[in-house]
Length: 307
Image 1 (cartoon, rainbow, N blue to C red):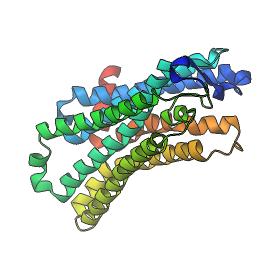
Image 2 (cartoon, rainbow, N blue to C red):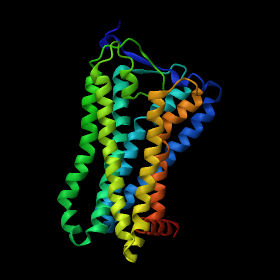
Image 3 (cartoon, rainbow, N blue to C red):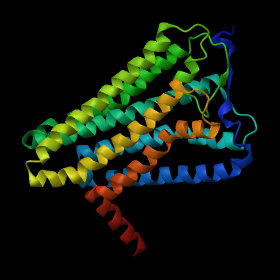
């Protein structure tokens, strides 16, 4: 029975089956990470540099892209090193930090999508009070809350995890997450069940709020032709982002809790990585193409660069 303080390294066993094609995987992963960084940075700089885009919806979108860079930075650099390495280990402290970054980033996605749904609800269903409700002070407060709640909540959870007695040092994944670390606990405690259950319930409420908001938005848009156009332009990207994020996270959660060992290691790795692949990559492309103001700004910048 090892005390948590005696565990100094974890072994990531998810890399066992990639030795034969690790160089191909490294190349694909490196290109993918570069594209993720490029599309998110492009959207962030576009919103920051264009003062006409300094509105709540675009500010929330900017923070959503920053969160994508934050979450992927906690995974891809270490993953790229591990692909080419012969020993796939991570320090105890490094594992906790990676778990904090990846988990808090996943939670923050739903926080910002909930804020964007609230913004669209006020803009479409209560347009006369939009500017008074979504004033700069309240917008800054909402952005601060969307960052501090996930990070603070996961920081408390990771701190509690660091006090557990662990009876193993092998993690059956390609990166660290809090739930998998807790499964190594010698004697399961109430916090092992309560902590993830509370987190899932809390952010599932975010999801329900977004669905509730868009229900009323669509109800309003059915009666007004001009609002129907606004819904198609600004709300469809939000719904697409929500669906992509929810599906990816749901598959990963189901895999972690109900994995029977029947799936191949490649399939398990894909399910583990998809939340760090599809939303950070697809979301900026969806918003960059669908939102007219951002698309026009990027196109004008590219035209000036060619000249």
